[in-house]
Structure formats: structure tokens, C-alpha cells
Length: 106
Image (tube, rainbow, N blue to C red; front, side):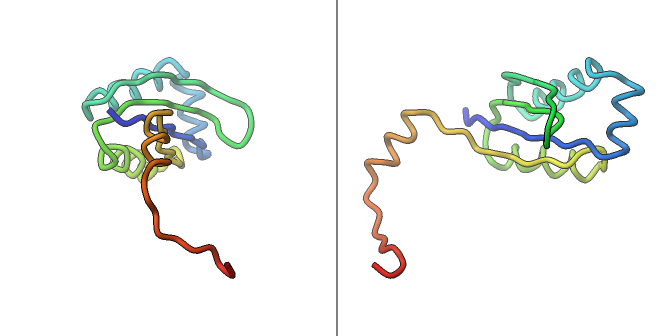
């Protein structure tokens, strides 16, 4: 199953909700959402810096990952950025593919 990294930035409303509900409650909501999409949560971490929360999850496909990002961002409490994660085997397969390309100016 494909793996994804969701980088999450809380909005002001999201921060208010976090202060009211706590991080454990949000973890349960996220796990239930991923499970409902047929996926599995791998890791969930709160962080300092540009992003407030990192989630790695397995989901059935890109459509499920896009749906998750769209719905959570549209709700207004967060802004998400989704990264598709690739295994070493997938990169090895990509390296073996023939690609017809010419760099600009070459």
C-alpha cells in the first residue's frame, strides 16, 4: 500500500481546538479517519517549526490521500501538505526506466 507523509500546520481555530481537546483526542480523530479510508497510521508526531504535526500513513491510493488532505484543510482547522513516500525498491524501478529527455540548453 502506498505511504504518505502529511505535514500539518494548525490555523488559529485549530490551535484553539487543540488547547480545548488536547493532542490525544486529535490523535484518535486522525486514526479513525485514516482507518475509515482503508489505511493505517504509521506515525504521528507533534513538532516545533513550520509544521505543527507530522503523520505518516499507508493509504490505498493517491485518491484517498487527496481526499484526506482536501477534507481536513476545507474544515478550516489545518492546512496540509502531502508527500508521496517511495521505497528503495520503487526508486530502483524508476532508475531502470528509459526516459526520453533533453536538459534545457543541452
